[in-house]
Length: 531
Ligand code: F6P
Image (cartoon, rainbow, N blue to C red; front, side):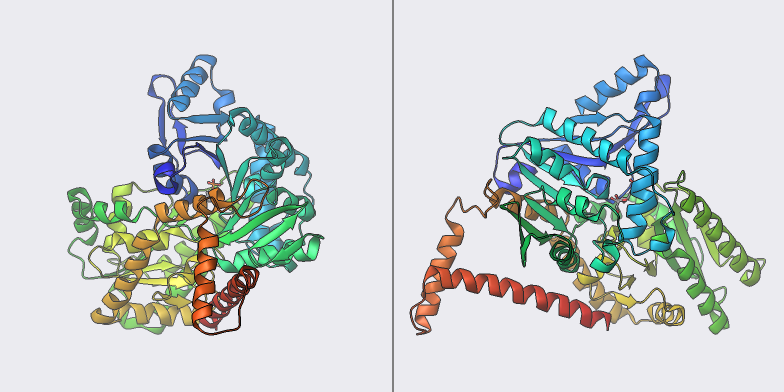
């Protein structure tokens, strides 16, 4: 896919903490299964069909018996995967300590969850160095390197030190917070310098891109203009690339017999309307407040008791991190209380599943839901919202979407909610449950068109196009003379308008200005939706 989309021959080296597969079982029962999560799910089909190699953390590999380990490495290499091996203490300090103990809560505005002392930064740095070593070992002239997410913030800079002419992309899958939050990080300048080792730095929304630029402006002496930072005489492109899903796959899956049977089983003979939540069990996803809003709905509208039900799937996640263990107990308690207080002998208000579901079950659940509840407190993008839309080939169903999910910037036809306003959320759920069919279909049609057009292939292709378009000295490349041609055409248009003669430099200045205005308008439009 990578070559077909951008017409270049070099390989793509994908670098991420999580690999597209996880190793399950042992001995003869060993299997490589698809890994869960947005990044792995999104990039897997691109890797399977493209000339890429994937470098990532190999999990338990170092603790396996030698023969098993050899077999797994061989199988991974057959899939063009290069495992990075970490010791228990390295993975503990890096993944549990810094990535999910500090960076995750910080970038999601949950600074109270950061522990008082964080002794593991050295470990994070040394693990990033191991990833950089692996990249340098694999790299061949002409390759593009695409590094992902908050686990590897220092890798672009570390690779740049050793491969000064490489094309390096970096994409952040979580929000980049407002500068006032980001500056809390004790290693804030090292993080920015690391990210700015890239040729292109990408985010899900224009808002995150501007916040990154604000942080660079406030915390470094580098020159910043909209969409570009000049760092150590190298120009770095900064842009928004909203990640999509494999929409065609979800739409096709919805039409299969297996999904149809599963969906019918779910509906059963019940006339109850179905509310659905599907999340990783993470405190950023807003599950407790969503449950409280549902409880509020039942309290305010006693007539709907027994006529509605909520299925909440919480996929186990990061359960070796203490804050996640505590959070799990919190949810168990709320679910137990609501079911205990509001349930009857023949009706259970919430079916709570702390487990992952198969792809067939997932698409069937999306298809059976009357209202999909996606109400994170803060979320880089949220691909569940897009998967739901892509699965609704029937054109029906309502999406209730938090205004604090990156997806909200792209999906204005969803019913927008503030997940902190529990009363409002309860009222919005009621409005969604009672929305008339024409309105539901009108909204879903618009949502489906966008999710189909801006899918996972479009996302990767847009990022790679910009990465390939940059000159290796960091300035924008123009191999096909495209932008020069554009400028000449624009100059012609201006000439036709009978404006006094302008040179190419004026047109260039106009382009920069236009880009600046576009970004401001996009940010203002997003703010308007929030208001
Ligand atoms: O949102 C960031 C992210 O890395 C996603 O790509 C993925 O869905 C999730 O976090 C998975 O987390 P982990 O790799 O810790 O299971």
